[in-house]
Image (cartoon, rainbow, N blue to C red):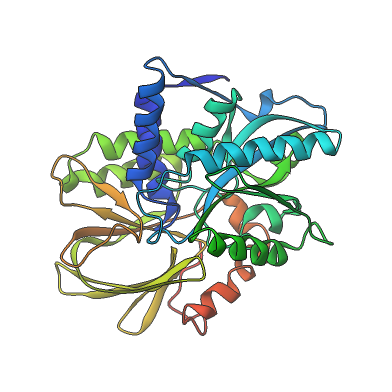
Length: 374
């Protein structure tokens, strides 16, 4: 089913994808800035979104994801609009080189900035977007994702700067996501901690095999709830929504205050710890590397990825705003929630083990008995 995404739906996508981003995927201000740019250029702007079932069957008709790669803190406020368009154009050239045709764009990860970005790039390039997402959440590295875990080659990757410099990188093994990650992070640092990236060129069969189908529609629905619910009632509304979807969801902290943030921005990542004191006195720590990776209380780990750990700013009484780790601050009134990720994150052991290196680098040592796996 084809849907038309206009300003109302796009705004909901920004907030809904910010929720599903789980602390990563860019700031909502970046996504809202892209919408503003669109409607300044064309007050009647509209993006066509199609279901995967509507993709052409030809295996040589392909799509690409596009995203911003880098440190969210170092690049906060940057829209990456030119980088994203240049990356899509670069992947179009790569597709032609391989005897394929690029006809669709899709979101590579959920996030307040990184989900609106492919929509903007699709609009500028005159291409429809797909009602799917490469991960159904945000992820910190190219090798921590649904697509490589489910056998989709990461290589070739296209890296593009704001000025139009475009780099096509191909690894010896197209499945070597770690090598792609190293190349991308090196170029990211060369271009002031931020760059546009296109990867995972996919046809219809591959999307059915690997991606988080229907995720854009979910982002619209959750975004509608966040935008139209007073912050005091948002947890209850979200609980009702996810209960209807039969998706496990729970508040970790219904309301509390951030008391401390320790953060380091190096190597294209924001790594750190956020401490929240719940109104009931409980102290909770959230450990992140761009995305929220795990939560501890009283020295016990109570949730880890791939569950989506979302933080909501409760400071505006009229609505709760999902925030990335580039938007948090000491004294901020927040809620903290856990939501089960897309089912694709639970069908292979590698969906868990692909996080091992990231978790260890963030200080995680062993799975405690208290951790709940859905």
